[in-house]
Image (tube, rainbow, N blue to C red; front, side, top):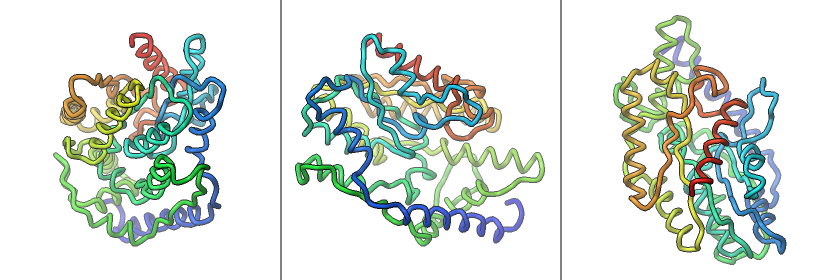
Length: 324
């Protein structure tokens, strides 16, 4: 590790403290994603025929971008002559949340013809999947209750407090990731929060972050994969089409840090996803579609795209819609 262990851990706790204060200060309000869904698909006028679900990839904009449009807005402009697009995204959303949102569609007056489902490979990783702030359990419960008809109006919602104790338990969780000497979530989080002072330390940190984000071994039994399978089945049961793609990741930077081992891990996980979805579902593999210059910066570990990257992703989606 870099620096002292206590200093790094104190840095993590300080950051968590800021998260707690921000969440607990938020007021209760009608749940915004459900409000947007109802506004789009429970009106008497024609509704958008495309629903574009997503996580932060759809909505993050780089500071230097002149074009501030989000991915779904770029797509809407590209396909305006043929389609209307409703974008519905939130940081760290995953297939379980998408499933709950689509269940709500089944009780609304209208439904989209096509639902676009990005599959972010990182959402299956311990870093994302186990993070207490990314569970959305209360949100899913609210959505399921609405879908079941328990409420005629959009229920109010206040984010559940994420306690420090939850993160301390998370840090103790044991993980095994090929090629990494680290054995717990806490060790990976310490490295992520560290400030390297040498080239060797910088390279080690990059390797461990990319490993933590993407090199977990995915199985069909993973709860998010199960939710994705159920989501596609629900869409088909109610006459909606799916467009499923693997979110672009910064494979150029990751391969520079980890070599072919990284590509093998990502391709293996994409293959597992495709096999889990079955032959009747076409998984568009765009995980390697974008070079480092399309991300916020060339060594970015996350999937956030600059204006060129968002435009390219919108172009890929538009092309896939044409060929359906």
